[in-house]
Length: 111
Length: 114
Image: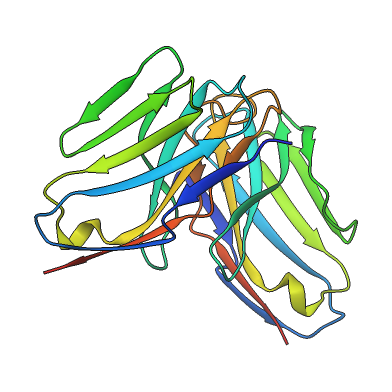
């Protein structure tokens, strides 16, 4: 079945540095790739998404890139701030008709 | 005016008991979901309903039974609770079937089985 692998599981950066989280997916028919942010004790919330007809998408300090050939997509956060500290989930939607989540990355931004 | 609301937020109960979690959305979405988030934070889909019809039914024990009385409500009933059922259960809704669009999550219901 569809599988989404996410790395790293934890990431610690200094405030102002960049953070990159990577995901790979197994279903080549996957066509929708969202990223969710979950702050401690809160609900997951969509921060950015990309569809398979686009290679890159930016929204202020966050960007997502997609490599369909390699079945790989990444989240990039620039100029990190302490409020970026959270768990980030990638996900992929494809032939299964379900949104499959990665295992999550705990990002810590140190002031 | 909460978009997706679920009750109760916390549930502490003994093994063997039966419990229910309720979910309501006022976004006008046709599709609703139940996700389970375990202690390792992994988000796993359990069920999905589209306009009261069950469209996703993952491999979960049949002690878990969802019910959708109308497209704005999706409840989860759990029989004979086990220790391994302890988790946070998230309800969600989306305007698109299956999850090919934004999911709007509720605040979660933390279930602790003693």
